[in-house]
Length: 120
Image 1 (cartoon, rainbow, N blue to C red):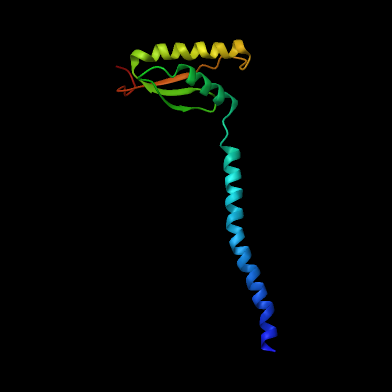
Image 2: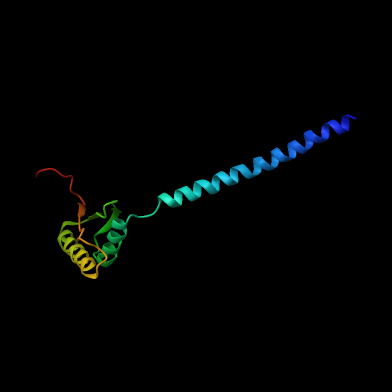
Protein backbone atom coordinates (compact mmCIF):
# COMPACT_ATOMS: atom_id res chain seq x y z
CA UNK A 1 0.00 0.00 0.00
CA UNK A 2 2.82 2.41 0.86
CA UNK A 3 4.35 1.62 -2.52
CA UNK A 4 1.23 2.79 -4.31
CA UNK A 5 1.25 6.09 -2.45
CA UNK A 6 4.86 6.80 -3.40
CA UNK A 7 4.41 6.26 -7.13
CA UNK A 8 2.67 9.57 -7.88
CA UNK A 9 5.35 11.37 -5.87
CA UNK A 10 8.12 9.65 -7.84
CA UNK A 11 6.35 10.52 -11.09
CA UNK A 12 6.03 14.17 -10.04
CA UNK A 13 9.69 14.23 -9.03
CA UNK A 14 10.75 12.96 -12.47
CA UNK A 15 8.62 15.66 -14.09
CA UNK A 16 10.19 18.32 -11.89
CA UNK A 17 13.69 17.05 -12.69
CA UNK A 18 12.93 17.19 -16.40
CA UNK A 19 11.54 20.72 -16.11
CA UNK A 20 14.56 21.84 -14.10
CA UNK A 21 16.91 20.61 -16.81
CA UNK A 22 14.91 22.17 -19.66
CA UNK A 23 14.23 25.57 -18.07
CA UNK A 24 17.86 26.86 -17.98
CA UNK A 25 18.38 25.79 -21.61
CA UNK A 26 15.20 27.53 -22.69
CA UNK A 27 16.18 30.72 -20.87
CA UNK A 28 19.64 30.63 -22.49
CA UNK A 29 18.11 30.27 -25.96
CA UNK A 30 15.75 33.17 -25.30
CA UNK A 31 18.57 35.39 -24.03
CA UNK A 32 20.73 34.58 -27.05
CA UNK A 33 17.90 35.37 -29.46
CA UNK A 34 17.21 38.68 -27.70
CA UNK A 35 20.90 39.58 -27.79
CA UNK A 36 21.18 38.93 -31.50
CA UNK A 37 18.12 41.04 -32.23
CA UNK A 38 19.62 44.04 -30.44
CA UNK A 39 23.19 43.59 -31.74
CA UNK A 40 22.46 44.53 -35.33
CA UNK A 41 23.98 47.65 -36.85
CA UNK A 42 21.89 50.61 -37.93
CA UNK A 43 21.83 51.52 -41.62
CA UNK A 44 24.00 54.55 -40.82
CA UNK A 45 26.54 52.27 -39.10
CA UNK A 46 26.61 49.95 -42.11
CA UNK A 47 27.31 52.92 -44.38
CA UNK A 48 29.95 54.15 -41.94
CA UNK A 49 31.57 50.71 -41.98
CA UNK A 50 31.67 50.82 -45.77
CA UNK A 51 33.34 54.27 -45.67
CA UNK A 52 35.86 52.97 -43.13
CA UNK A 53 36.77 49.98 -45.32
CA UNK A 54 37.33 52.19 -48.35
CA UNK A 55 39.67 54.49 -46.37
CA UNK A 56 41.46 51.94 -44.18
CA UNK A 57 44.85 52.55 -45.78
CA UNK A 58 46.37 55.18 -43.50
CA UNK A 59 49.06 53.68 -41.29
CA UNK A 60 48.44 55.83 -38.20
CA UNK A 61 44.61 55.87 -38.28
CA UNK A 62 42.85 53.22 -36.19
CA UNK A 63 39.10 52.74 -35.88
CA UNK A 64 37.80 53.28 -32.36
CA UNK A 65 34.07 52.89 -33.06
CA UNK A 66 31.24 53.74 -35.42
CA UNK A 67 28.47 55.63 -33.65
CA UNK A 68 24.78 54.87 -34.20
CA UNK A 69 24.51 57.88 -36.53
CA UNK A 70 27.35 56.52 -38.71
CA UNK A 71 30.05 58.86 -37.42
CA UNK A 72 33.52 57.35 -37.53
CA UNK A 73 35.54 57.83 -34.35
CA UNK A 74 39.21 57.12 -35.00
CA UNK A 75 42.56 57.73 -33.38
CA UNK A 76 45.61 58.82 -35.29
CA UNK A 77 48.35 61.35 -35.83
CA UNK A 78 47.74 64.87 -37.08
CA UNK A 79 49.61 64.47 -40.37
CA UNK A 80 47.08 61.87 -41.60
CA UNK A 81 43.90 63.32 -40.05
CA UNK A 82 43.09 65.70 -42.94
CA UNK A 83 43.78 63.19 -45.76
CA UNK A 84 41.73 60.54 -43.93
CA UNK A 85 38.81 62.93 -43.44
CA UNK A 86 38.96 63.87 -47.14
CA UNK A 87 38.92 60.19 -48.10
CA UNK A 88 35.85 59.58 -45.91
CA UNK A 89 34.08 62.56 -47.54
CA UNK A 90 34.84 61.15 -50.99
CA UNK A 91 33.55 57.72 -49.93
CA UNK A 92 30.35 59.35 -48.62
CA UNK A 93 29.89 61.25 -51.88
CA UNK A 94 30.34 57.99 -53.75
CA UNK A 95 27.61 56.38 -51.62
CA UNK A 96 25.24 59.20 -52.63
CA UNK A 97 26.15 58.78 -56.33
CA UNK A 98 25.46 55.04 -56.12
CA UNK A 99 22.11 55.73 -54.46
CA UNK A 100 22.79 53.79 -51.24
CA UNK A 101 22.68 57.00 -49.17
CA UNK A 102 20.50 60.07 -49.57
CA UNK A 103 23.02 62.47 -48.03
CA UNK A 104 26.73 62.24 -47.45
CA UNK A 105 27.04 61.49 -43.74
CA UNK A 106 30.74 61.95 -43.38
CA UNK A 107 31.10 63.02 -39.76
CA UNK A 108 34.54 61.99 -38.53
CA UNK A 109 36.08 62.50 -35.12
CA UNK A 110 39.84 62.04 -35.17
CA UNK A 111 41.31 61.76 -31.68
CA UNK A 112 44.94 62.77 -32.05
CA UNK A 113 47.62 60.81 -30.26
CA UNK A 114 49.40 62.93 -27.68
CA UNK A 115 46.79 65.71 -27.74
CA UNK A 116 45.15 66.37 -24.39
CA UNK A 117 42.61 68.80 -25.85
CA UNK A 118 41.97 72.40 -24.96
CA UNK A 119 43.68 75.58 -26.09
CA UNK A 120 47.42 75.69 -26.59
